[in-house]
Length: 292
Image (tube, one colour):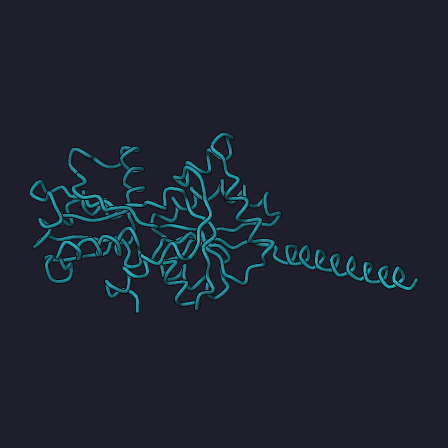
């Protein structure tokens, strides 16, 4: 007859423990009042702000907290900002994600990527009609984007090396423009013979008639590779991380707000991702001597 009296207090203890856990989770969500967001500066600061504003407004409503976007000066600053707890969510390229993962000892994790980032590509462009292949770049001047850019430096360099062209010895001069749109400006303005940038920015500039395609031509497009993602630290409150992930995955082109956000992000939709997807990027960085 004593069994029921033992079960009742045990059940009550379990209920109290569950309630305490829920209260703690709610408290953790409330404790973080601001989500600090940034992105690698692969385009101008004004363009990055323009692209992020509708997404930021959307995330504020989904998370129930203020969302602040802070531009950074360079790619390295985006890595350091996340690692040193000055940022909570960062739009990384594949290479900058790898740098952040290595620098943090595996404590930075990607949560979502655009569907397009499963098979991202770089394009090589020129105004020089004598350049028709990678081999024709020998002895020419050339610009990459940022040194830490996946699609503007790492992967273009990797494909040059695969074509038996060492950019540091076989080209007349190499430069780093700092951003994809700046690469287009350098090539179209005659500052260099050719350059490489991500295909997404190239297609956007062409669609906006910001590049004269009668003068500037794509002469090589790389095979596909994993690239951009939204990353967080592994110590982010799991409730917030899940809400954030769910918010990205819920974006839908069939509603006006989702359509605007996805178009600005140049995305069909967002899908889950994982660190293992970027193993090839990490290997390429080691092979190119860009990751110590």
